[in-house]
Length: 232
Image (cartoon, rainbow, N blue to C red; front, side):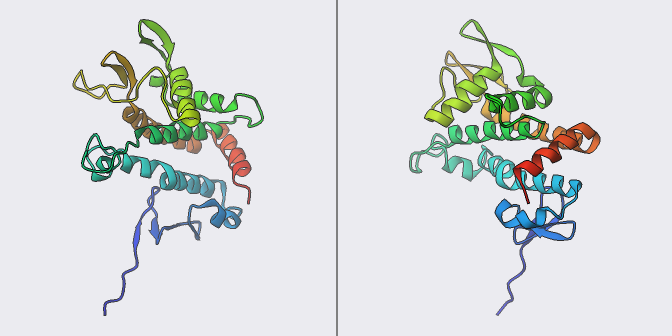
């Protein structure tokens, strides 16, 4: 009888994980806060950054990347337009709400105050203005100038979160030019390309983590918010 091999894989920050755990500063972490809470207090500021980056990859960025790989069987199975033989389902709207909420979550670590009215919107806006500048602009929607961040927040994020719908616009890709556009008109409806938004967001997080290493004020606000969000 063969002995079962120990499963291991590389985590987002390059360290070897053992059965879903990663090692940071000689401690094993599950990346689930309730399990890791007592050990977080032992981490240095650098260790907390590594834990956060690995956790966000584990619970958010990596799963969305897999679900939104449009060439994969997983994507086809949760979007019946790509595989009509499977039971009717479409997951893009739900995932896009998660992505937009993820942007807001990252924005919280830029020093926003939780107690202020409208703080969620300010977190979202602050992150995009700093790290996703291509999305901080006005666009033409039905011959009217509209602020793209308003469309993302009001017509997508809030509309999905509170009514599971998108209002006025769509979120499909716009392939008419032969390349992946961030937004455009499809069948006379203005569309935000949710896939391109997520790709841009993934790239933006690398700038965010680089700032944590290179800019003391960004690092200081991150650690302050980390300790508030993840008390140990």
